[in-house]
Image (cartoon, rainbow, N blue to C red; front, side, top):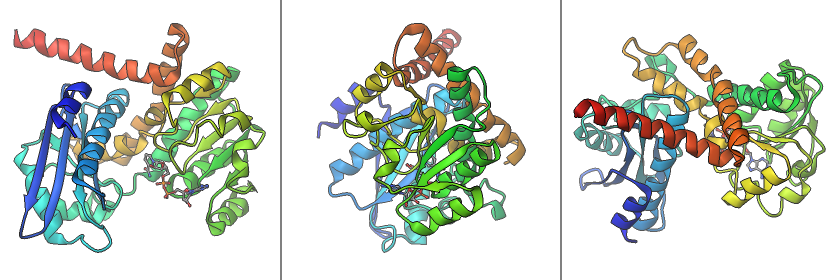
Length: 357
Ligand code: NAD
């Protein structure tokens, strides 16, 4: 892998390799962009097959955080970190504290948080060594589980899509097919049910399906059948790449809006949705509730869940803004989201240059 070439191509600022023999730490911190503010992005612990794979993941994910944080209206740039290892076997206090010391050396250019393989309790240990970590448990004065906030943001984004298509936020009586009933999917179903929507749901775990059927009167279908459900809205909340050559021909929805990351297998699938007249709420715009909530820990007055909720509610405006750009400029919504992020970064870069001059 030619790292500098990749960084040049994607505009990354910095890549840090962290090695500590005593704790066995092999970590990577990627900072993509700090024009808007310090980089924020989670720490992932994963058994990568190679160092290149781990570096590429950190670089790729850090760029995604720049765009996500920019469109979410946060005063933050994008970064991401990874620890190479098995989170079930190799994770311990020494390793996490060692990683925390590396974060501290960056002096606030990068803030870490939880991601795959890392819990809020782990972040408490990272924080023993650094001032630049967020996403700690509620019991410790932190923001806790981000999932209810992600679900609220997705719900608000769905209302924005409904308004765009039907001229009203009223989704009562609308049929919504929900794929994935885990941390986000369950809370999302709760919001949709309270708003009077009819739910058709699926998960690979029958007990999760049973709960949503019993509590929200949902209709269950098999995981394979969810794509072809005749519905108003398809909401992916499980896996990435679910919008692809196999699923698009069977979709019978008018809107695709859910929490799952990287829903489009390829950008061309976003073009295809547009051709079919299906509104796609770009994943990183609609699923930003979690990061907005985590970032609320960085407020000088400390974390406040009411203020955080108010910010997450604004995902309605962010999704509406992206849909408006797409409509006005005649481009797919995923491109409109990228354009919004890039425009904000470019404008702030200009202001910074003006003041330095
Ligand atoms: P989760 O693991 O709690 O839930 C995912 C659910 O999807 C699980 O119940 C799983 O059984 C189910 N699932 C997996 N494969 C499936 C399939 N083929 N068909 C149907 N169901 C299937 O994860 P989560 O925290 O709820 O996150 C859901 C998605 O949203 C993920 O893509 C995640 O990356 C993304 N996301 C989550 C957050 C958050 O705050 N948790 C924030 C941003 C994005």
